[in-house]
Image (cartoon, rainbow, N blue to C red):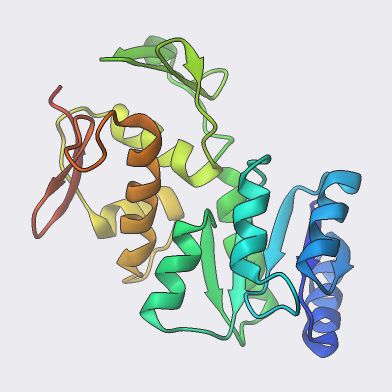
Length: 227
């Protein structure tokens, strides 16, 4: 059973999401503001957060940023705002996925499960710990260290790095990354990939504007290295 914190100010949406998830065996914790969401996150330690952007008081974006300041809990934004700017800004704030309302419970649950699986990937025995420049990637402990210091990576950031470092110098298209990391089998939203790469570069690169690790292959996608 997954414990889901739903931060949503619309009572009807909050109730509908809760009923749908509970019907599928999940536990839901319901709050209507970002401030309440932060307090509930600390008190109840949910497995995942469903977060609306349009909240009274503290905005959903600010709530997302504050959560990321102390927690790597998976965050899925659930919002009616579908403009490119809104989606990109939400992802850059630290969300792992972005679902546009209205969305069925089946879609919400599928995206939740995909995010939760990103931190439960099996490690190959011959590449359990690999070193790439200043980075140490531990696939068994699901940890990444830079200069010996552990990096705080969100679930999607971690899975993207694990995937890319498993095949150094191999170029992957954005669609391939969507399918393998986000588990979106349809022709998906490449903004998810680009925003996650940007966040990951900010954490692992010495100079994110001149990346050493995650390199862009223009017009196609990304690759890890060469270093």
